[in-house]
Length: 602
Image 1 (spheres, rainbow, N blue to C red):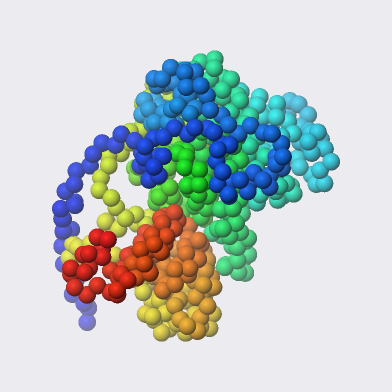
Image 2: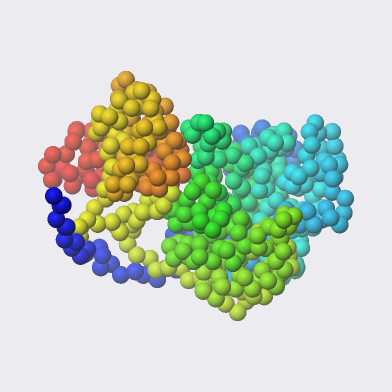
């Protein structure tokens, strides 16, 4: 007998639905005291003595040398009013906000393209890559563009200068895309990671200051470039083993932290996590940046740039643009956007969708079209600028530049094309919302049941306490069949998949990690957010480190005491997860309404 069709009632309205949005005057701001109070970065890095920062410097190849890491300027160097900017006197956050709300600003273009072009006009072979600094290096290094900051600094500074003078860039990215211990392992140059970042940023700092001095009304800022590395936390390198990874979250955090210290010691004004093809790598970079900002007490603006690899509009690890943003918005970036992989004309629908949801400023730096059969890029400066015009006409961006194939002439054309148009307006600020993500994003407020009430359907069949079948599969180590249970829940309408492997006869730490690592490789499962559920905090954190999206942590409570509760909540916040807090305290579970209210208020 066919079940009667249920009546679908209109969505219920509550008081919070009536809160009227307010105009935004700035992007969402990080919660640190320095950011909240717009404290200018003093650029006195020698005063940063946190043990982890000092340890990075102590093991670097620069250790024992008297290198400069302070970049403060006299407070009266330039006038105090915008558009002037003086390091140590002015807040970079306030300056960028003023610029991005007044006009479309200019980023630079491709470093690799310019190095290749230099090599076509001049000799740039193995010997030149080595230079005097690495003339006796024990492996081939040609193609290691980042090392040119040390072996051929005049080439890199020359490229920097062209982007500032010919391309009219106001923001200059450092030649540090691959300057991590992980990426430098290909050239056996892991030990030079700090110095590569330091030199890449220092050279940019020098040229920016030189060009700014010629026209102080157009300050040139240094963006410390943080690339994705050549490993990925979300994708298995083994076809046979979906749980295998060649890098861990903690290893990524470690390598990114060293990069951040080097970039800041070199004089960077801004940090940009760019060309994100796996959001888990980006989350590790953002975690490392967060640690540096906490240890230093500084306010450093953060930009984030994702890469959608084809016309599916997804990253290499499978996320949509909206899911990518939902996964990283906890870092409170000043600017988010897209770069690389596609030409401007192919980016149009994806940048529009991103512009519809992003709460901060936005940027785009597209390739000069798609690569041709020879690996080159065919768009001229004029055609590239014309293809970017739709971004300016529609008010989708505050910052524009170029990626692969773009040269200073391309950037000059972009500058000319964007000049008549205004910047993207920040969206109005509405009430807070829970915004989760797997491969796709989920705004919890948008979900309601047939009665019209808010209703989030959490699938509990991947919970050992909720499914005997799942428990038996986990005990046998049959993760493949366990994935079928997860897939069926999604097919049947679960908005979120709960994962719980609590059992005294099971290694919960190992089981949680393996299950999550396999689940994130299954699109039918990982399209929805996860709820990581365990009685032991270290188990949920272990699972969280393998989630590229924004999951829910279930749960913590005050039964562990206020101090430990705050530690756990802070750590979850750093990872960007949502959180279930139970109405427990040191005396047990709240039974009466008064106790529930008291504990929740606390």
